[in-house]
Length: 68
Image (cartoon, rainbow, N blue to C red; front, top):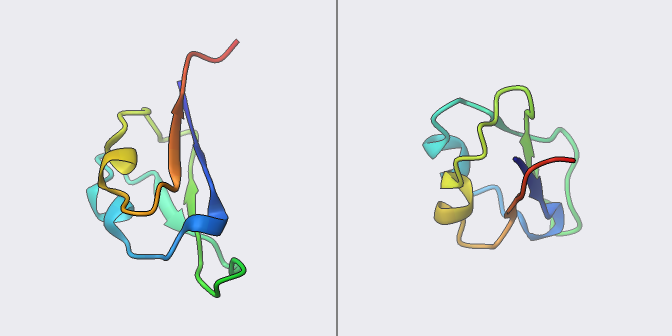
């Protein structure tokens, strides 16, 4: 399983980072078009639990199926 992000939608609210049980979410050093530092997933730590998807008010996260 893998989680993808849509950086353009991120408003750096921090809900994903605060609720990630594995500490797999940080914020990019770069800004998106709206001037926010978008969320970045550490694939090594991420367990694709979907909590980020659930708590994000802006639809930044998408949990994918099994990797091929």
